[in-house]
Length: 412
Image 1 (cartoon, rainbow, N blue to C red):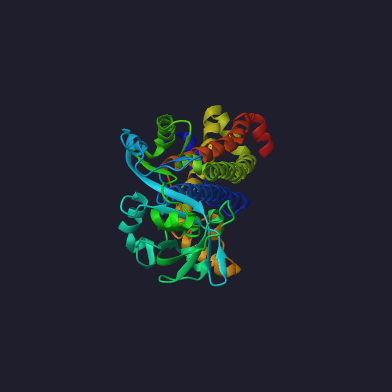
Image 2 (cartoon, rainbow, N blue to C red; image 1 turned 135 degrees about the vertical axis):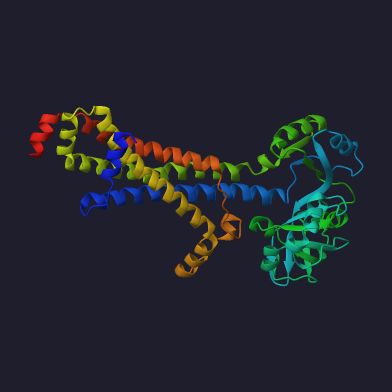
């Protein structure tokens, strides 16, 4: 065992004086810094992953549509897009904002018309019916619809009820006013994301045209690609195929504001919470400064016996690193433990404060997500270790520079 490590371990033996209490505080400070960083970064990463999963459970990788004219269902563009090597499947869609009324309640949802036999997103909901269907059945035929759970709660409807749907296009240019279309709610679905569950009506293409007062055509093409993260490149290539009159948008671009805000928030939280670890490094510095004062005579004796400055400095560096290692180890355990029981803790806090700590309408999710990645853990460990090392280096250097004669005279 190196002499410096032996000295550091001997100094760490519990003793009943102020230095022992400061040792505990230094470890607790490091523990708190590591635990909070792990919890916050894991939750932010969880939000990113969960939002991506929920968004892609209901939205395609790429939307290709025209701002100026409708697209015929038999348009050759469907075949041209489907033949792209990075495209797995294509499906037509109609999307518009409408006004829906049930009794005295009124909302402004989005109406999406799809082909229930080919729409991959709808088929995904049907395939996972045990988790996505809350009431009724997945049935899209003439004058029927399937709506989101939160939207159903807002309107106060259940499966089998009839909702009146009005589109702004019902007010024709020549002054003719068409009557609202009554749609029977066949089923109520939930994808687990508040924003989606609170926004969408799903109908078949012909029913959507009836609401819009259109005879034929669709708004565009939904595309599922082979590479999720290559959706932006695929969107650019499909735009070149379709021509300038069409717009092609990837899921990244359509949700860019949401994910950019999350990235900025995650980085800012990491920066701000690092302050806790900096404070912990100051506590380690204070511990080493007090120990160097307390051990002045021993330092003088060691140096008079021929111990080099590096050995004395190494003892203090080992002392600080051992404190930091204990704090990192215990903080990692505490952080992972809190993440393991995060939902229970959230429920207790909600009951304690009498308010919803994680409002679904604000965060779009019904539970607190978390995803712990090793690369994030490694970054946190490395950062805290570096701060602890820096916090211990200056007192260690000052202790090693002590003159043995002056140290012995001071102690005497």
